Image (cartoon, rainbow, N blue to C red):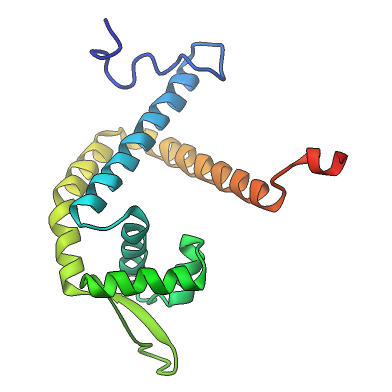
Amino acid sequence: MTDASRPPHEGAGSSYWYGEQDSAVALLGALRTFRRADQEMRRRMSAGMDMNTTDLGALHFVISRELADDPASPRHLAEHLQISGASTSKLLDRLEASGHLERTPHPRDGRSRVVIATDRAHSEVRERLSGMHERMLEIARSVPAPARDAAITFLLDMARELESDARTAHEDPMGDAAREL
């Protein structure tokens, strides 16, 4: 079977980093395949909505905060996206001009501002993602119930590891090499 005709998870056990060919290495390969597909889906969605992936990430964050009844402030958005206040202002200007976001007075503290998604943004996101989310839920439901806890733990542990590595690199980008100088 050629690589092109092989299902995405087959052959995932071979790796630059891991010499052994076992199911744990194949699991990591499947995770990388998922991550690539997720990144590509986000790229396609942002292009389809005529925005860049950072703008799409901002829209997703704002909608998530709205659903949690905890509206996002421009500062929250800057922290989440890890961008400067000036970049956040430009991003918000773009998304307001495109009709996706609005800056409004905070509902409980009128002195500050919050960012909310417009009806147009909600409509576009639902139109583009509702079918895919339904299919994703069906795939998740196809995982045997006894295996779901293990899958959840695996994914959350991997997320924590990636976040931990990002924090370590940000705090000490040169690692031990900088201390040796």
